[in-house]
Image 1 (spheres, rainbow, N blue to C red):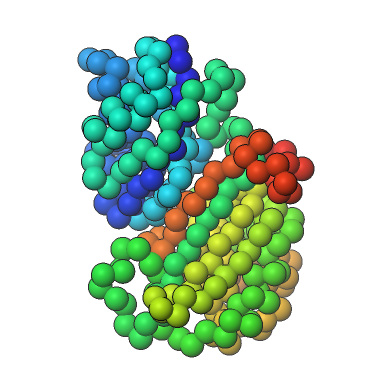
Image 2 (image 1 turned 135 degrees about the vertical axis):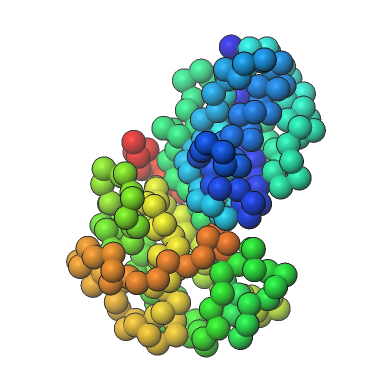
Length: 265
């Protein structure tokens, strides 16, 4: 069996998230079906493992999966074969042969998420599936001050939705940055950390925009760490604005602090 590491992009609009569910269209379900078709398996037996779940409506620029394939095919053949089978809202970006010890989920050392927020007075109908929406004025100085409070190791209990199965809510954020795209009238936020909890980024974005709009004190994030109370963080921003931008593994970014962090289990 040959283990392949596959990086894929998808528009999450018409998917019920990543994880396979009965009678639902999911990323895992579709990619698993297509891998088994390519292997000519009459009874699907090849299992696809992802780096982690994304929720319904969340997009990915570089999700990572792996699977063990019964034939030793060139990576170009797997790349072209899978792309010819996938629907138009999914694309294989890269295929690699990896060691049988590699695991798409358990070897992750970090992830980078990107959030787009439309700042128009009303929701742009052509962006509604690809951005969140916030119609109140934003002070970027307040946004930058808020983002700096996310950097470091913290207990994110106030930033995790109910239903989380994580054993610990402590995570390390290496980078949190934001910019104002005046041409697109968007606030764009990016977070890079060793792991993220259920709905964590969408809750973080909600707190940041409330601070940026003067609806919270600029220094409110440290208080939320201490409170450990999800209800005090209030908002969960829409899934439509969230993108999984990159999944990191050991050696991907040797100059970055992730090399000092142990992968989360």
